[in-house]
Length: 156
Image (cartoon, rainbow, N blue to C red):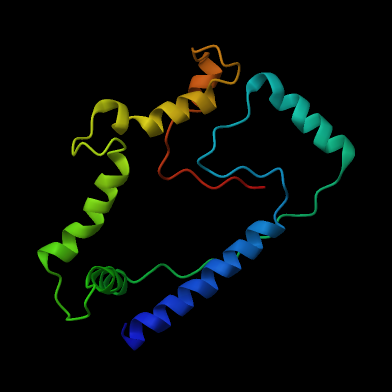
């Protein structure tokens, strides 16, 4: 492994460790951005209980980092794909991550991804949104299935 990769990996470990510490210090009422909102029937109860039992400290905000340089981001992406550090990305190096992703999705190992294997994530999202486990989504439950790529993180 090249010295550049080793130092980049060490820097990544430091950043991930800092993120983990900040996440650990956050209040337990926070939900990840990808999690569906609480069920409408129980949301008020949870907020009322939390408010009556404790006063949460103000949230910690990480300092905003400068926007990443596009050229630097591409250089790092290239280096991640150049497994043998020869400054070239072969067809095999390029396809290897895609093969691994395909293999994870092909749960029965038959070399084909059928609809059931492909739709696992969507079925999990539906189950998480179906608060009353009725097998159907109310309008309020359905709202939680929307995906927002540019949605802000929860302010908690």
